[in-house]
View 1 (tube, chains in turn brown, orange):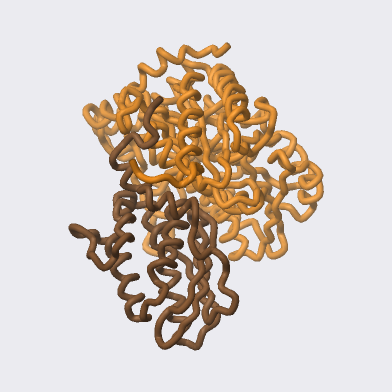
View 2 (cartoon, each protein chain N blue to C red):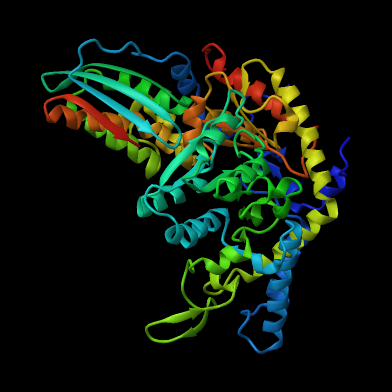
Length: 158
Length: 416
């Protein structure tokens, strides 16, 4: 039988960590009383994520992500929840910027601050999939803006 | 049995010799654009190497030759679709432009507030958005024929919606997603009875089987060269001559005029009235070679070959667990297009894995977002066939689908 992952480039897109988050998404159960609900949608792929966020003392104290869409979009949302929890809002903003840059203007190795999120660096080689990876992060960005405006529902279109 | 010699045909398409990601290319995306035979590529090169010139105005040998070939292709197109004459054939950039031409040149003049344009929920964006724009501009209303569970037009809806207020029915002859072949001849009969004109989107039908505009009794037919072995950048609009005569020009400029003063102009004869500026001469000439190639195969044979592929594909896909196929169950009711989904796996993931197996399919909304909504899906995968595809290639497709399911559904495991 032919190997499941026959090509190096293919392996770069569907890294085991990404597949693992896609098959078993983390923090999927919607947060009960969030300060902010941020809905993200990519009309071209139909990818959807819904982030629920709560904050304490300027930091993200709780987050959930559920949605439907491709493995990249859903794994990205799942990994976001693991990384973002407990982060100061400004730190979260910095991660959004670093993550976006890794995918849209990649330069050498991704910064160490991104940690496991470097698993997504291969997506940069698949231009049509970049927005799948950034959907949850740009949705988070809008969610943080919504927090600045006193909470509520933010809607993001990728 | 297919009446086409696939092996011989495949030899005519240079691109089919290449490998993709180390595998032989399996090209199942002809509904997006077809591959081109050597004869078409050669015709394009021949134009630029031997008779490249601007047409209609030149008085030198090259211009005369280019004009003759360009107009010869117009005649070939007319013959190919059974049009009464070449004056009914307008060259555009693509199907989309052909439909926009009608929407603007006919619609702006003829549509009034309250007039109705009847479309269907299975239309490609190219046969939806131009009408939305023209409805906004004129105050006309859009109505949409629904589909049944097998993705066929609901005839009761056709009868209900096509009425006295209907000025135009614009409908695809074959869905680019469901593959459904629509009864456009019957629809034209009903529409004409009720005083409406009929535009047929033939982008998917004209390349894949015999189409005769006089038999269909349609008023407009739009299609693209690039989906029928021809080059990109050439579209066709067929219209009844009297309609072209009464329509205003679409684009203004050179070529489409007879006499120009500083503040007014008179129009050229049809069809040139609708061909402003230097047209896509080289590609139109090469399109002639594509039509010759298809005529050589015989459109009845093309249809028979694809029917065989669809029959085999529907059978094979029904044996793969987790696969949902959209559209009519009967192969005879559809063209060579099969939209499907695999469990909850997003078609973009499926498309990426298949690509790594050397298989090119389309994945997404297929420029038919309202149809996706109607089907209750965000997107689908789509395999589409043409003269160079073989039943053997379906094995690769099935193998790729199985591999995709293993990759995304397997329980998490540690990396070796």
